[in-house]
Image (tube, rainbow, N blue to C red; front, top):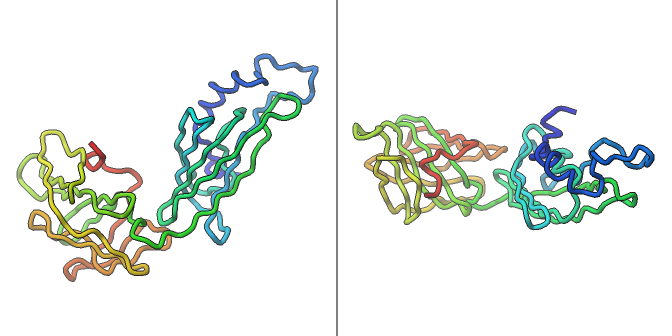
Amino acid sequence: MNTNTKMLLLTLVLLSSVAANGPCDLSDFNPDNPLCTTEAVSSVDLTITDAQGNTLPSATITFLINNEELYTGGCDGSCDSVTLAYEQVGRFDIDVSAPGYMTASESVDVQMDDAGCHPVTQIVTIGLEHDSTVRALSGAWFTSNLFGDSTLRFGGNGEIIGAILYDRTIAGDGNFYIAYNGSLIRGAAGQNTWTDNVPDPTRNGDIFNFSALTASQPIGFENAVISADYNTLTGTLDGVAVTYSRLEEMPEPLLDP
């Protein structure tokens, strides 16, 4: 099984920091008890699927252990049997999200085995439903087209938050930083953050529309179709072909202040 398939979420940290807190402290391993092995045992093995039961290739996973420590990570390549932690018992509150899908949550209690040595691994499958709303746009999208390069940020409900229009002015660093409809963005040090009010994006089936005129520049997309993996939008803008690609990381100027 490849490394991506068994990608661990901060498990090295968990192994070093929590194993010693459990009843089976490996430093006190008792060789006379054959039930207590030195091999670490996983607490939760999580598989993430779509509504049809197909394993998703990637997703973001957040989990809270015993209502105390919050961990965030993800799977990339395959979300089949992803180990969340080793040698940890208690309540796991798990949230899973992926582009184009509704966020899903599940809680599971991990108990110690009868020998009091290792956790009893919980096998958990969470299925995600496709999101048929404009929330599928949530995140950051980049385009390079006839009108120039730009990045748009949409919020958790698909609302427009902000934009960066690259190399559009001779002032400062040459970029425009825009916050829309009363939203706040971090902006860039020493640069103005412009504000504007525009219509939020809409969705009809798998067709998305968002277009506006900002700083005398057309931005957005019209009659755009989203790809099957929800990472590409292809449409037009003022009659010009445009393609947007979802970014894995949000540009710092578009983050919350």
